[in-house]
Structure formats: structure tokens, C-alpha cells
Length: 155
Ligand code: ADP
Image (tube, rainbow, N blue to C red; front, side):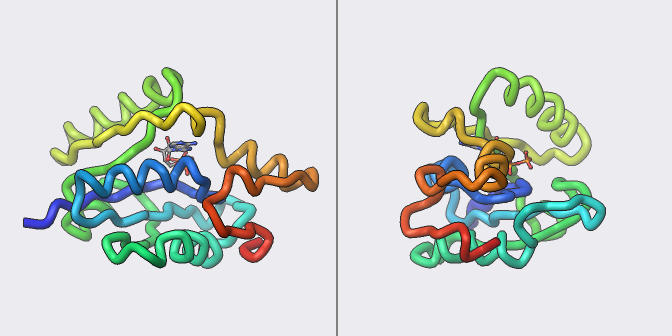
């Protein structure tokens, strides 16, 4: 039996914090699908296509990573591809409070469990909203991005 999980998020953009969670989780799962959630009514800085390209470039060395996009409920998407675990990162107690209710509801509704990994301390302050703000003001976000990634290629 292959152990599979999905790592859902908007990933606008995918940061080194996201990458770290996924690479660490590869020790627990045989295959991880990075599932980019999108909502056609919601404006994002990076297009869906470019968010996918960025993730594909970061994991070009890792055949156990799959990339998909979905709209609607994460658990419905997980069920549709036959995956029984959701992977999430936890940075702060605020993340925990927010994630706890969703994870418990998802479990009650579908039986799908959520597996949490605590962020590496150096990645705790990184979040995509702040990264977007820095970009908007012309700042350099390269230290928050995966090695070898030039974010302007994906804008
Ligand atoms: P969402 O759109 O659900 O807020 P994000 O794209 O911001 O999702 O993040 C997806 C997942 O990655 C979440 O579980 C989030 O907690 C985690 N995450 C976000 N930033 C970091 C980080 N800097 N370090 C580790 N995990 C992170």
C-alpha cells in the first residue's frame, strides 16, 4: 500500500517554508500531491499556471511529488484522488487554533486525518502574504524562496 497525502494551499507564492514541510513529510509518505486550491473569484498575484510551474521547478528532482489544482472542498478533492491524509504546517498557536477546527470537522465528515508538522524555527515568520507585500514594494524576497528560484520568472 502506498502512503499518500495531499498538501493543500494557495501557494501564492510557494515559499521555502512550504518546501521544508513537504521534504520532511517525504520521510512519512510515499507520495505527496501538492494541491493548489483556487477560486476563480479570488485575485492572486501569481497565476495558477505559474504557481504550478514554480512548484514543478522546485521538485523537478523528486518523482514522489505530484502537482494538482482543485477548487471546492479540500476533503472532496482528497477523496476524489483516493488520498487519506492531509498535510499541513503549523507556524504559531494562531495557525493551530485555525487548523484544529478544520481538521476535526474534516475528520468527522470524511474520516480523513490531518497530519501536522511544526515549522522549522527559521521559517516561522515566512508567510505568502508578507512575501507579496514585499514584492509589491519592490523588495527582494529571494531569501524566502527555494534555492535557485528567481521569482520574477513566474510573475
Ligand atoms: P492557505 O492558503 O491554506 O493559507 P498557504 O498557501 O498559506 O495556505 O499554506 C499552505 C500550508 O503551508 C499551510 O499548512 C500553512 O500552515 C503552511 N505554511 C505556510 N507558510 C509556512 C512556513 N513559512 N513554514 C511552514 N509551513 C508553512
